Image (cartoon, rainbow, N blue to C red; front, side):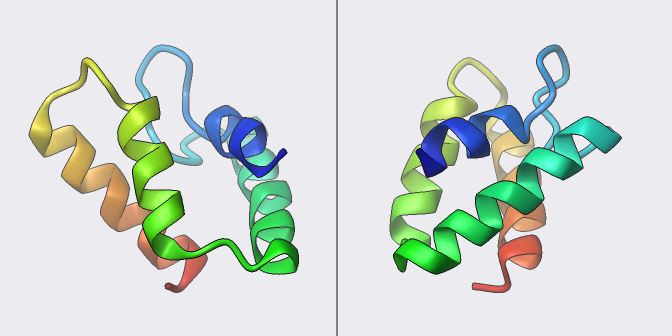
Length: 73
């Protein structure tokens, strides 16, 4: 369940993490579920890598940093 919320926290076109108000709302929902279920940063990182397949390595790094700050992990 957390994976679908996390995926929806990324823009459809630009693949930016929580870059739009609706994406931020999904990020908030994902954060609640992730904390509740004790999901590790390693699991989150693997899922973000999967979500961002086909983007540049720089974009992956930038979005990973944003997500890490957001989830405070």
